Image (tube, rainbow, N blue to C red):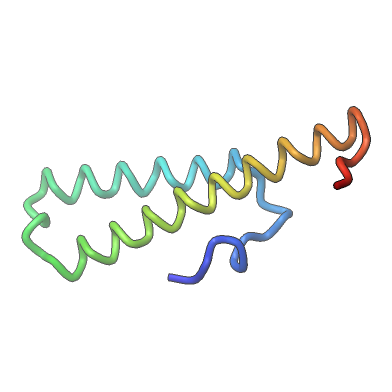
Length: 78
């Protein structure tokens, strides 16, 4: 997985990243229900993607909050 800071696209909103994260969590739950929990390669890949998306979500959310704060009260300098 790449670094969330370098792979984040500012045109993607935190909400869009969150939606994809929820889809991945649903996929993981389904995989476990269907007996794929023993497929280590698949589960490791899915877990790595989940970790990456969680970090990406944090980056997107913090960036959106900082942008809104700058729009409301000016950029923070120093």
